[in-house]
Image (cartoon, rainbow, N blue to C red; front, side):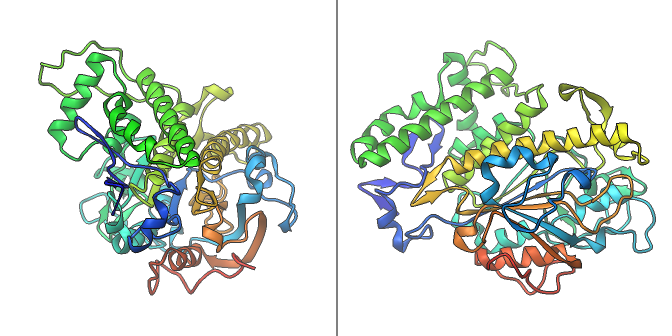
Length: 448
């Protein structure tokens, strides 16, 4: 659709660039006949962390509203009223069920599929269609990208990564079919260029080289279109657009600091080197920024992010935990290891809080981006030492456009399939299915 001669998704353009717009009141009323609709669209996101959590410092003691945040969840204080902590969900198909060791690989592959993965390290991998892709296959045509898959660690599609399970299982949570895991993008710069490129690879590369050579921002190339648009917007939307563009520039500056410091001749035809931040926290936060930008500009409404691959043995020296995460997860009940694990869990939740606060601070319509989202955060394992798959650590953030009563801790009956939550989300998203994995129906209690 167009408003005053402008297209909502591609209004700001420059050499090899196409910058989508945030939700603007000046454009929204005319969008009633479009796929976007008169109100902001609903978004769906999923974040995976490996090796389970230290449940005693994760699980709130009280149920309902006004629960006290345990140590691991303390970073979420600013968004507590936007959270639903769900206790009691299970991924039965993450259990061995006769297949022996390989719990970490299963924990990732089952996280969004609820399907028992075939134990193989060869090409005959098999799991199930994941909830994000079930939604994308129905609703993906409404946006520029059907979905966006992100992660902090790369992966392999073959080889043995966990007791006879293919590396594809350990490094993927999104599956477009039973046999097709989707790769994830780990480089924030590449995601940024993808979001703001016009889709023509050659032109995008040329634009990037020219901008780097001239030390110019993307915003310098779309400034003329931005200035024209500002004149046609109301005061509130002018401020909103200015805040959006300022945010994009700030992210771009952080990406520039993360990239290699190279002098590039725009006339030389070679791929521009790209890099990721050495600081793990900054890496996660930049990927979170990419998710927010993608949602904010309606480039996609569905995204996943793996903070680390299943079984990751990354060390956390930045929080004085030099030990490997996977090694620590086999704590054997030792208090010293418990203390380090909960600090790692606290670190991960701090990054989640960054994402959620950024979404909450992004105004949209009569609310904010978090109001119009459903973000699931959790792990495919409960306790890393026991490798158990019941009572999973799960948070649902956001209000689902008014369909979720947040700010609560709810307990569900033991052995309730995690996929029942996904069935409820798909129904709210307008993309219902007959089943996901081992689902038995929708999850009661999300709306009072």
